Length: 65
Image (cartoon, rainbow, N blue to C red; front, side, top):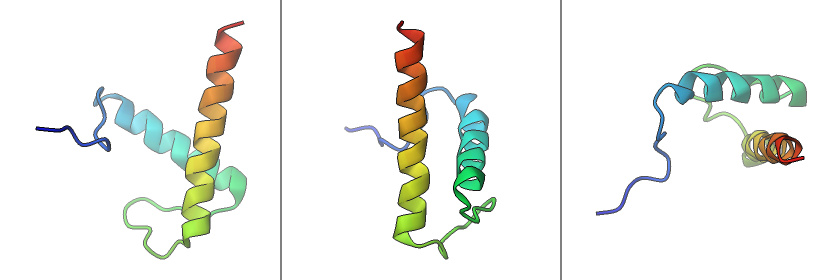
């Protein structure tokens, strides 16, 4: 049986990730709202996810110095 890759391993991290997602969307000018966001274009949604990954990688690299 395989685990869903979309599930948080640490449930307490969900709120922090949602806050981070909203902050990144705001920085990018993407109108992200709580709940359903099916009105976003693929480009808008992808830009938020991509920027989240870039920032997480940058933070990890900085912590390794």
